[in-house]
Image 1 (cartoon, rainbow, N blue to C red):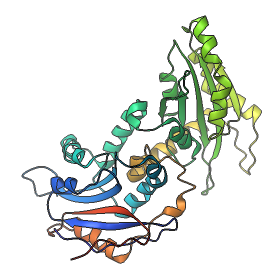
Image 2 (image 1 turned 120 degrees about the horizontal axis):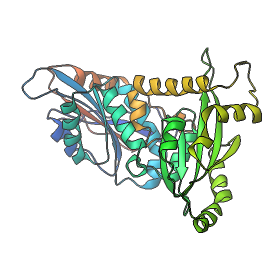
Image 3 (image 1 turned 90 degrees about the horizontal axis):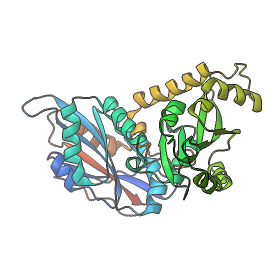
Image 4 (image 1 turned 180 degrees about the vertical axis):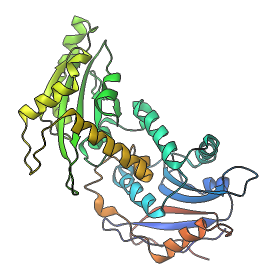
Length: 353
């Protein structure tokens, strides 16, 4: 194994992404070099299956489980950009600890799926469980408030206003997560795409859900949180209107679209009227975007915090880093993986061979 010469990326916010280590071993070797207290990325070349000569390219985002919370908030938005620069991959994975990588990679290869399919399956599983998506309530709300994020709805539970669930599937998916015996507070993002590269028209709906099986006492207790929930959500999503729903039928998409058109105006040159079809176009565009850019969808769950405001953190691969990536991708070469880490600006880079 040899230490790759540190390849510093141009960063404005006093950060630099460095090619830290290159190795000639397999996934076990790579996993042993991952520091769970830092954010890192890796590119690995490995055999698709034991006994075959076909190689797979694997991209990995390592979101260290032991990272300080503030570091996660400021640094995780880098992941999508770094993975993009690493190029296309057959499989793209996200791990919290290095020791998880061999098992996750084995599972991905066993399923025999592409990077797109594997990420789509993971994203679906994550969107169905607040606990598995790894988000807190502010991160989830920030995600929905970010027009570029695939996440488009959030539900808060009524006692402490913690995250109940969040997802990328729009109104239908949100409705599946509304319990009949609870009050919920939520927000739904409507995104209407436009032609010629123009940004989409984005509107937000605040939802106050009162399940049909909620007791009178509980209803009063939970409804007392209404304005506090609205204030918290508005910090991230400036919603255009509110809707109180007692039944799923109260969240009828055509009726919501009609009401949206009544209470808002389109302040652009687009003359289309809001419609359910246009809304579904927006969902399809987002879905296609996830499929076409798996590296972005991979880290969406962890890099939702203010991606737009941190766009200045985009790294630029220098020639030495590009060379390291090229070597790992080239079949038959000695080096089989390269590990990228984040260092404070001005710190010495890794020694090189």
